[in-house]
Image (cartoon, rainbow, N blue to C red):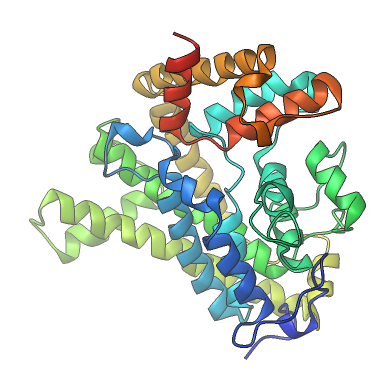
Length: 375
C-alpha cells in the first residue's frame, strides 16, 4: 500500500513522447528497467568509485556502489510507504553522468569546460537519459516519466542559480519545477547514496591499507559498533570482526533515517507527493546527532582516504588523462566517432560534444585512448 504522499504511477504526469502503457509493468517499473538496460548503466562497471578499477577486484566500482544505493533506497522506501520502483529507478540512475576516474575526473572535466558552460554529473545524467542514449525508433533518450526525470535532476535538493546548460535546455522543453524539493522517493535515493558510501568507503579504505581498525575505532559511531562486536564475539577473527562492526554502522544509519523521516512526515502530515515537494526542507533526513557523527567520519575519510598520498598519485595521473584527451579532441574533433561530432555551433558545441564523449568513457577506455593519442 502506498502512503498518501507517495508517487503513484497511475497518476504520473507522463512522458514527453506519448507511448502505449506496458501490459505487466507500471510506468516507474518501466523506467527502472530502461535504466538497467541502458549503455550508460553497463559502463558503470568499469568506472571508478574511489579506486581505479584495475587497482583491485575487491574494491567498489561505480556500478557496485549504485547497486548498494539501490538496496538501501528500496529498504527506506518500503518502510515509509513510498513507491519502491520509482525510488530504485532514481537510485540506479543517480550516477549515470559520472566521468571515468570518479570525482577527480569530474573536477578536471569541469575545469576544461569552464569556458563552455561547465560540467556537472547530475545534469549529465539527465542529458544521458533524455538525449544521449539513442536506441529507440521514435525518440532519443529513454523517454522516462516526469517523476523519474524530476528526481534525477533534483534528488540533492532544489536547483537554483545558474543552471547547467544541459539541465537548462531540457527544462525549457519539459518543466521539471527545479525550484522545489523533489519527491520523497528522490530524497530516499539521495540519502541512500550517503549511507552507502559512508559505509563502503570505510571498508574499502581498510582493505586498501590506507588506515587500520585501530584508527577508525576512534571515530564516533564506528567505535561503539566495534565495542558491541567485541563484547558479543570475543576473539573473532579480524575480517569477520570488521564486517560485523561495519554492518552495524550500516544498520544504525538506515534505522536513524527511517525513524527521523517517520517523525518529520508525521509532523507535516502530507496528503500528496506535491506537499512533499512544496515543503521548506527535505522530509527524508538523518537526525542531527547522527549527522554530526557522520561529519566526523567524512572528515576522516577525506584526509585519510580521498587525499591519501597513494590516491593523490593516481588522481594526478587520471586528471592528466582527462585533460589531455579534452585538448586532443578539441584540436582534432575528427578523432571523435562521427555520431559524436558537433555539426554546428562552433567551439561551444564542439566542447560539449567532447565532454559527452569523455564523460561516457570507462576508466580502461580512457587509458587506451590516452595511450593512442597522447603518447
